[in-house]
Length: 411
Image 1 (spheres, one colour):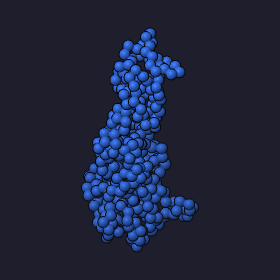
Image 2 (spheres, rainbow, N blue to C red; image 1 turned 180 degrees about the vertical axis):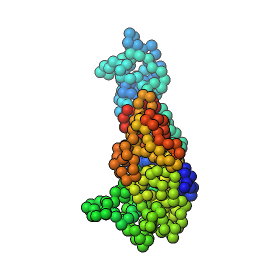
Image 3 (cartoon, rainbow, N blue to C red; image 1 turned 60 degrees about the vertical axis):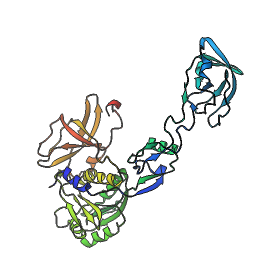
Image 4 (tube, rainbow, N blue to C red; image 1 turned 60 degrees about the horizontal axis):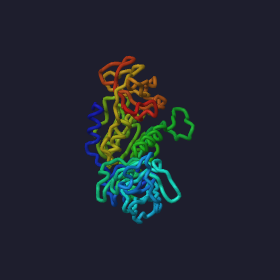
């Protein structure tokens, strides 16, 4: 059996990012910029006021104080959106609003809090220097400057920056399309009551949700019965996708037909990994398209998706950081080892003053889907290391950052 690291290295070795497309800006959230983004204008495009106040010449404020105010005539007003092209004469002031262009001749803005207004004049209660409360043109970026490098992940801040330089459409890597196949004679649709020996198909919906959370697009192929003919037909329906993702049919049993079909239509890179849950994981290609076969037990499917499918999808989508964050935790209730296999234990991690703490979800058998509910981490129990006693230190793979009780300086 391969180690988790060996399997992941082999899986990612010949995976390349998908082609580039231009997508509407609002559809690019969490996607990867494929080419450098260059400013088409200065940001800001003109010198503007950082405050509500009065545009002045700094020299005209010299010596002003509350005890010795300086009185200037107010010769106009400029608001955000005004052209602001009327020059300011010496010895005068212009009332100005935040974001409004600073008129020619003015080199400072005195905040309204440091003034006393009259009908047609203003008393200055403080002196200001050149550039005070003025945002210079190009202070954020200059025309022609690269403001985002290729490979950047587009988050809300990046959306705002791209909008400011005119990127209505953005070059990004395509979203992977994932063909999801469930196999097994025992499976029935979610909206159908199971009969004797049957269970509802929970894996397809769970994997589709994990695919969506990974930034990819699920394409459900339905359920294939335990026959080579049924699996072949289902896979044919997935042509055009970027990854085949199946659950079930990859173990060593008599009905492990997916593994057999994989051998017939492409080839197997590996099919066993030294871990629990999820030893039977198959990777190869179907008609040239990457194929990842996950175990049928729901928890095994859940865990192996996080360890293998998610990094693969992120690489297809152009991401450079593929793995989730790993943090040291104090395992308050301990955790079972899995002998010679590495064990991934479902847990809830929280931050406290002395560091990260983890509590497991109890029983960890691979059929207990309830053990995956409300978790945010997988505790890693190393192979061959035995059980973790209560209070032991371990590493945990974070599936989500805790939403509360996190020290902002320690994240």
